[in-house]
Amino acid sequence: MSSFGDFLENELLDHVWGNAAYTAPATLYLALSTTDPLDDGSGITEPSGGSYARLGVANNATNWPAAASGTKTLNVDQTFVTATASWGVIAYMAFYDAAVGGNMLAHASLSTSKTIDNGDTVIFEAGNLTITLD
Image (cartoon, rainbow, N blue to C red):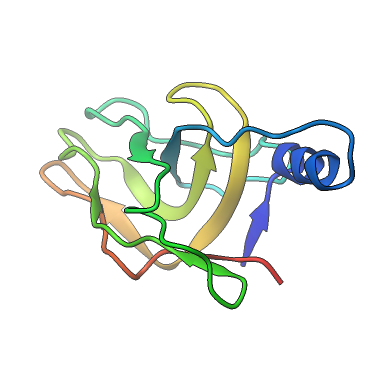
């Protein structure tokens, strides 16, 4: 199950229905979580230490080709740094508009949770991350 965050829902509503233009961030930041984030941006538990940092993904047509049938699909592999300590059981992800803090744009559970230990590398392969609006 995935969801847009409250922040992005409000920005899109205002953008489409005449209140204010929304400017998409040039970089989206992919966060990993051991807990299920809520639409208001709370509830997320990102790994702490072990070289973890949100992964910057250029918000461009190379990474995100044109939508089709209400779906955008990541087109290029995205690789986090190699963990230098345990990151725990990663079961959720979220996109933010900043490397630290910022506004949560969307969140989802992963199809398969995975324990990330020292020496592991998390890769989101091209074609395996989709965002659907229905």
